[in-house]
Picture: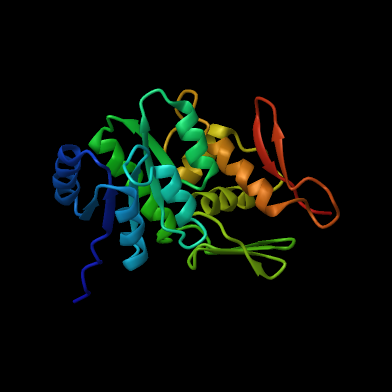
Length: 233
C-alpha cells in the first residue's frame, strides 16, 4: 500500500489575527497544514527555521512589511510567495511581482480563490505536470522535475512562477503566445482585467536571461499579440 502524500504546510503571515484564524480553519479543511505568524520578523524567522511549501504574505505588517520580508527572503530562499495586497492598490501588486512574488490576491481575499492559487503554485513548484520534464534550446536547459534552469551551465535563480513562464515559452519557442494563454499555461489561472503579473514575470526573465549569445533578442514582446521566445540561429 503506497504512503499518503505529505500534507503541504503553508505559512500564513498576516497581523490580522481574526482573518488568520478564519483562513487557517478553511485551509485545514482543504487538506493543508497551517502555521501562523503576525509580523515580518517572525515570518522571516519561520521560513529560515523550516521553509514551508508556500507562504501567504500580507503587505502591511508590523516590524517588517511584506516587501521588506520578500526582499530579505529572495536571496536566501525560493519558497513560493502569494502576496496579499490592499484592494485596488495596483502599485503594491507590481512591486511585489518585481521583487519576486509568485502571485498576488487583493484583500479581502476569497478563501476559495486563495486555495486555488495555492494549489496552482504547488503544482508548479512540486513538478506535478504531465508535460516533458526536460527542455533544451540553445544555451538554456530546463528541468521541471528538479525545478531548475541553467544557462550556459550556470544555474539560474528563478522563482517558481518565472520557471513556469520560461517553460511555457520554451515549449512553444518560435511561436507567439498570447498573454492570456501564457497566464493559463504557466500560472494555471485566467488573466484578470488589468492583471500585470505575466508582464512582470516576463520582464524579470528578460533581465535575468539577457540576449542570445549572438546579441539577438531572446524574448520578444509583440504589441497586442503576446510574447515569443525566439529560436537562436
